[in-house]
Length: 155
Image 1 (tube, rainbow, N blue to C red):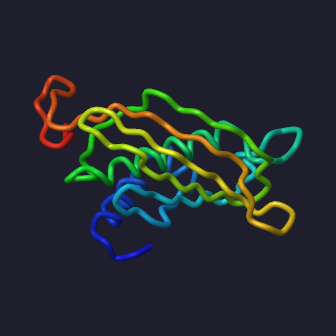
Image 2: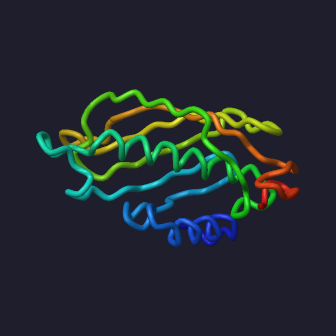
Image 3: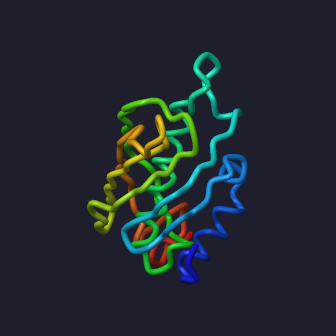
């Protein structure tokens, strides 16, 4: 990871969140409009019958990377307030090892954000796409959130 202050701030938030700690999720890159995450393969994520990464885990990392990519469009990414309104996942092939998810912001407007994502894993010796997807988020920029007026989404 770079020494970029925004990336460091987002990474600190990631380390403090219980779900992300459990997943052992790590930020590879966080830059304006883009986030890349690495998820190490773990037996606890595997489907019982096949031993491949469970689709719910794949969906979770798509949602997470998308949220961080959209956070990077706020003046204060660590304090950004947003919520998923739509999540779609298209499973292409099973993930049998560590996964990498890359989220790109398609649009980050005043109140809505849209992302595209690609999830890859090493499959039969080569890195291949295992899922694609994307999200739509409600962004809270300079709005009321949780009863308090926010500045640039901070609650």
